[in-house]
Image (tube, rainbow, N blue to C red; front, side):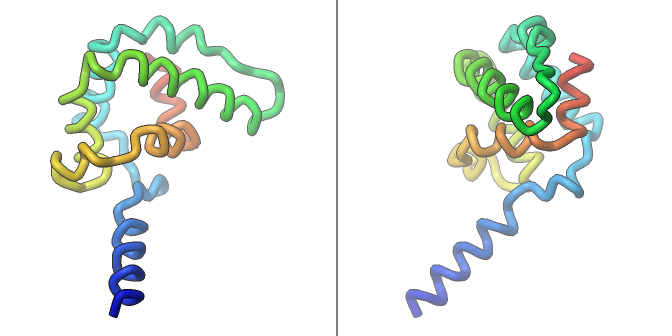
Length: 122
């Protein structure tokens, strides 16, 4: 019984992960992302994150580290909006979104090409 519950919990967790191939940058998500970046005041700092060593994997890792640091340093400025965005992206309640591992989520988004394209536009 315990093992079945554990398997069910893992399965549910996997189902709730963002499926990047299905993620759409809709007007609602785009507006939320823009609002969050604006409230955090990191737009100009994101534009300065120009990492191009020629090694795409290494560049993504470095971009991820720098972006995580920027977001973590400024997350308090847009806490509610961030929770709402996570809720929208993952299709979960705001209460559940409050418990999401933000660093894992950021890493997941950084490896998503559409999100990288959005960051270049901000």
